[in-house]
Image (cartoon, rainbow, N blue to C red; front, side):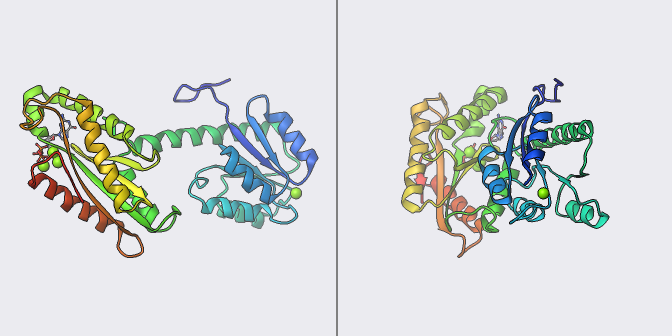
Length: 304
Ligand code: GH3
Ligand code: MG
Ligand code: MG
Ligand code: MG
Ligand code: MG
């Protein structure tokens, strides 16, 4: 077994799709020593199985009764979660026009039958390594290095997915903007390294205090965080904001220059609305204004 750049053993989940049972058996026999292989014998099953097993790579026949391989490919490429999963066409059609069409649909490779087993294995290996490498880069590009939370770039991408409808879900969205109080004074008193450590603690405390684990908590910048709550109304948003504030109080992180509590506190501004009625960015701005108000009213509080 070979090692990948991030040190893991190379393996992976492969979905093979072919209407001929003999082809499925052959592919399984040459791949299953190294990979977890799932098999589908038609397009519909392929789409269902893809949702379930979340493959790292898909090998796709073209000619199949019902939904053909091109349609399966097109459908998969329309879904954000499969857009970056490499698809290799493995087909009896050897026309150049077919190959071009397959590649235009977003396949990374095109192999014709009858195929050479070693060639198929080698190409799969290469595409899985490339996939792993681009996944790694992708993860680093969207994660804040200090706190490990999604970063501002990820937040913007997520907002974009919500407003283009690419991420399906409810029309409503609540936004919480969260800012650590008197943080400049924290750095001045305890030093910048302690400040960094404090931001990590704040991030972990906020993440653990989410009502719904898949709401997007991001580091918005500096000592500011944002929580995006798709489908949450004003009542839920207010309750969540109060929970965050309370969680910070319970964490009891000392801050001698926080004049009221002597510990680290946050201010939170919330906004709620419908994406069909206003752009997501407008909700961010409203939450920001509410945050400003919370600061003005004395900090360590929530303003809706
Ligand atoms: P307020 O209560 O009004 O929010 O006051 P504040 O002092 O928290 O706000 P201000 O915007 O004046 O200062 C924010 C500070 O956060 C200044 C900056 O040095 C610090 N900061 C931003 N990012 C980091 C970081 O990554 N690490 C550390 N240690 N400090 C940071
Ligand atoms: Mg076929
Ligand atoms: Mg700030
Ligand atoms: Mg400030
Ligand atoms: Mg602050």
